[in-house]
Image 1: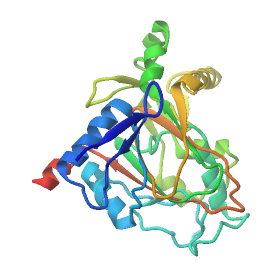
Image 2: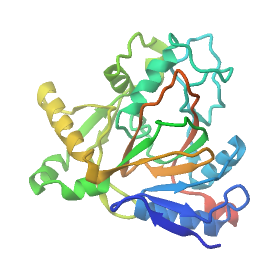
Image 3: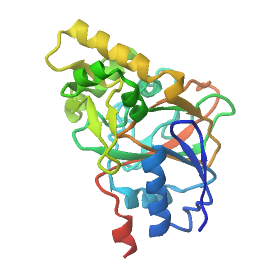
Image 4: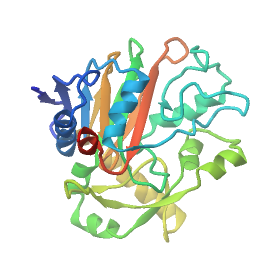
Length: 294
């Protein structure tokens, strides 16, 4: 096995060539991927062309699968994908482009805000794996931000200020930022807000990151206006060009990112003309590949 690593940015992100996850998910391969993740935080594996079952098999080696509630549907609509897959597409259950009035369109809009997957869930989310099954000819890139480098470059006074602060994170806050409304009681009850620290230490690398996301509604114990202004200031700092890059998809690519030290966002494309079928798996807890290979 020979894996060639090509950086995608001066600070983080890498392309891994020589990985063929359809046929080789051995411990050495998975260990090499996780080692690269510790360094680069975002790894693109081009041309994997994984099926749903293959994506799930890869993901299960990296942690415990989370399950998607796939909200945004009406009560009469079936989920397009099985519950282990997060539907990051503009498609309906018949594989057609979502109707203009479909409330799932509004739900997808907040994916274009800078966020961290499942920061509104109490469990520690580790990796997300996004598989590009069908990509538009233009647009639809995914942006990433290195929250380790952002933390490193914060003024020392700001580091001291945020060290013991906590924020409330709510998926309903980020959805409301994009004009979402009329959330059902059963949807809200299924995903209540949670509290997250503003500074996180990565358990594998020991590096500190600042924890931000569009899901972060307010800082606990702060006046609302002051809290919002400070969070907006930090978000503007974190999303400067020196901390971000945008990945251009090709069909069949798999991109893995570490939610403990990155943010990401989708970008615009003509979603009324072109289909975009992206399927995400997200895991939590320690990787299992060594145990699975034993």
